[in-house]
Length: 143
Image 1 (cartoon, rainbow, N blue to C red):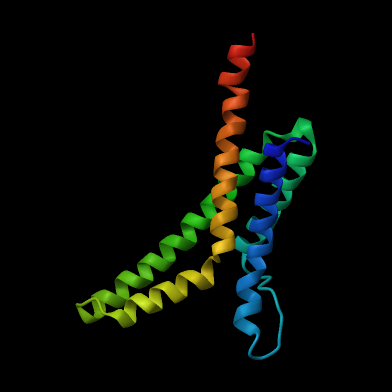
Image 2 (cartoon, rainbow, N blue to C red; image 1 turned 30 degrees about the horizontal axis):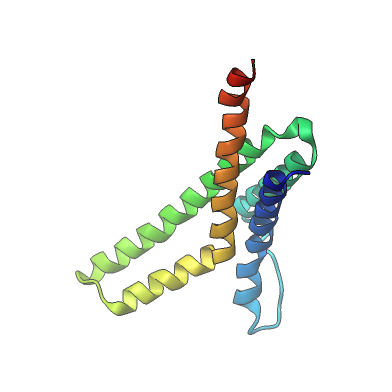
Protein backbone atom coordinates (compact mmCIF):
# COMPACT_ATOMS: atom_id res chain seq x y z
CA UNK A 1 0.00 0.00 0.00
CA UNK A 2 1.43 3.39 -0.96
CA UNK A 3 1.51 6.51 1.22
CA UNK A 4 -1.42 8.17 -0.54
CA UNK A 5 -3.72 5.21 0.09
CA UNK A 6 -2.57 4.92 3.69
CA UNK A 7 -3.27 8.61 4.36
CA UNK A 8 -6.67 8.36 2.65
CA UNK A 9 -7.53 5.28 4.72
CA UNK A 10 -6.51 7.03 7.95
CA UNK A 11 -8.66 10.04 7.01
CA UNK A 12 -11.73 7.80 6.68
CA UNK A 13 -10.89 6.24 10.06
CA UNK A 14 -10.64 9.74 11.62
CA UNK A 15 -14.07 10.66 10.25
CA UNK A 16 -15.56 7.40 11.57
CA UNK A 17 -14.07 7.87 15.05
CA UNK A 18 -15.13 11.52 15.18
CA UNK A 19 -18.78 10.59 14.59
CA UNK A 20 -18.89 9.03 18.06
CA UNK A 21 -16.98 11.79 19.92
CA UNK A 22 -19.97 14.15 20.45
CA UNK A 23 -21.95 11.24 21.91
CA UNK A 24 -19.25 10.53 24.46
CA UNK A 25 -18.66 14.17 25.42
CA UNK A 26 -22.36 15.02 25.76
CA UNK A 27 -23.18 12.08 28.00
CA UNK A 28 -20.05 11.89 30.15
CA UNK A 29 -21.77 13.74 33.01
CA UNK A 30 -24.42 11.03 33.26
CA UNK A 31 -21.89 8.25 32.61
CA UNK A 32 -24.07 7.04 29.78
CA UNK A 33 -22.68 6.21 26.40
CA UNK A 34 -25.30 5.94 23.72
CA UNK A 35 -25.52 6.54 20.03
CA UNK A 36 -28.44 8.28 18.39
CA UNK A 37 -29.71 5.40 16.25
CA UNK A 38 -32.68 7.39 14.96
CA UNK A 39 -30.47 9.99 13.29
CA UNK A 40 -30.11 8.80 9.70
CA UNK A 41 -27.34 11.34 9.08
CA UNK A 42 -25.10 9.54 11.57
CA UNK A 43 -25.75 6.30 9.73
CA UNK A 44 -24.85 7.92 6.40
CA UNK A 45 -21.57 9.11 7.92
CA UNK A 46 -20.81 5.65 9.31
CA UNK A 47 -21.66 3.79 6.11
CA UNK A 48 -19.77 6.29 3.94
CA UNK A 49 -16.69 6.04 6.19
CA UNK A 50 -16.74 2.24 6.05
CA UNK A 51 -17.18 2.32 2.25
CA UNK A 52 -14.23 4.73 2.00
CA UNK A 53 -12.07 2.38 4.09
CA UNK A 54 -13.02 -0.63 1.96
CA UNK A 55 -12.33 1.41 -1.19
CA UNK A 56 -8.79 2.17 -0.02
CA UNK A 57 -8.14 -1.47 0.92
CA UNK A 58 -9.49 -2.96 -2.33
CA UNK A 59 -7.66 -1.54 -5.39
CA UNK A 60 -10.56 -2.17 -7.80
CA UNK A 61 -12.99 -0.23 -5.59
CA UNK A 62 -10.93 2.97 -5.37
CA UNK A 63 -13.56 4.96 -7.27
CA UNK A 64 -16.00 4.45 -4.38
CA UNK A 65 -13.85 6.75 -2.25
CA UNK A 66 -14.99 9.97 -4.02
CA UNK A 67 -18.63 8.86 -3.71
CA UNK A 68 -18.20 8.25 0.02
CA UNK A 69 -16.54 11.65 0.41
CA UNK A 70 -19.43 13.33 -1.39
CA UNK A 71 -21.95 11.57 0.89
CA UNK A 72 -20.07 12.77 3.98
CA UNK A 73 -19.89 16.27 2.47
CA UNK A 74 -23.67 16.39 1.95
CA UNK A 75 -24.30 15.50 5.61
CA UNK A 76 -21.64 18.01 6.68
CA UNK A 77 -23.20 20.79 4.59
CA UNK A 78 -26.68 20.01 5.93
CA UNK A 79 -25.58 20.11 9.57
CA UNK A 80 -23.43 23.19 9.01
CA UNK A 81 -26.48 24.95 7.51
CA UNK A 82 -28.48 24.04 10.63
CA UNK A 83 -25.81 25.53 12.92
CA UNK A 84 -25.57 28.72 10.84
CA UNK A 85 -29.38 29.10 10.73
CA UNK A 86 -29.53 28.73 14.52
CA UNK A 87 -26.86 31.42 14.88
CA UNK A 88 -28.70 33.80 12.54
CA UNK A 89 -31.99 33.36 14.42
CA UNK A 90 -30.29 33.93 17.77
CA UNK A 91 -28.69 37.16 16.57
CA UNK A 92 -31.88 38.33 14.81
CA UNK A 93 -33.94 37.90 17.98
CA UNK A 94 -31.77 40.40 19.88
CA UNK A 95 -30.68 42.60 16.99
CA UNK A 96 -27.05 42.54 18.03
CA UNK A 97 -24.05 40.26 18.04
CA UNK A 98 -22.59 39.64 21.49
CA UNK A 99 -19.82 37.46 22.82
CA UNK A 100 -22.44 35.25 24.42
CA UNK A 101 -23.87 34.32 21.00
CA UNK A 102 -20.44 33.74 19.49
CA UNK A 103 -19.51 31.37 22.31
CA UNK A 104 -22.84 29.53 21.89
CA UNK A 105 -22.23 29.27 18.15
CA UNK A 106 -18.75 27.83 18.68
CA UNK A 107 -20.09 25.41 21.29
CA UNK A 108 -22.92 24.24 19.01
CA UNK A 109 -20.50 23.84 16.11
CA UNK A 110 -18.07 21.80 18.23
CA UNK A 111 -20.93 19.51 19.32
CA UNK A 112 -21.83 18.86 15.70
CA UNK A 113 -18.25 18.51 14.44
CA UNK A 114 -15.07 17.79 16.31
CA UNK A 115 -11.76 19.07 14.99
CA UNK A 116 -10.94 15.42 14.26
CA UNK A 117 -13.88 15.30 11.82
CA UNK A 118 -12.77 18.49 10.07
CA UNK A 119 -9.21 17.19 9.74
CA UNK A 120 -10.34 13.80 8.43
CA UNK A 121 -12.85 15.29 6.01
CA UNK A 122 -10.32 17.81 4.64
CA UNK A 123 -7.85 14.99 3.97
CA UNK A 124 -10.64 12.93 2.35
CA UNK A 125 -11.43 15.83 0.00
CA UNK A 126 -7.76 16.15 -0.99
CA UNK A 127 -7.50 12.37 -1.52
CA UNK A 128 -10.68 12.47 -3.62
CA UNK A 129 -9.17 15.16 -5.85
CA UNK A 130 -6.07 13.02 -6.42
CA UNK A 131 -8.17 9.92 -7.17
CA UNK A 132 -10.32 11.82 -9.67
CA UNK A 133 -7.22 13.28 -11.34
CA UNK A 134 -5.65 9.81 -11.49
CA UNK A 135 -8.66 8.37 -13.32
CA UNK A 136 -9.20 11.33 -15.67
CA UNK A 137 -6.05 13.26 -16.54
CA UNK A 138 -3.76 10.43 -15.41
CA UNK A 139 -5.43 7.92 -17.76
CA UNK A 140 -5.26 10.44 -20.61
CA UNK A 141 -1.50 11.01 -20.22
CA UNK A 142 -0.70 7.31 -19.70
CA UNK A 143 -1.94 6.46 -23.22
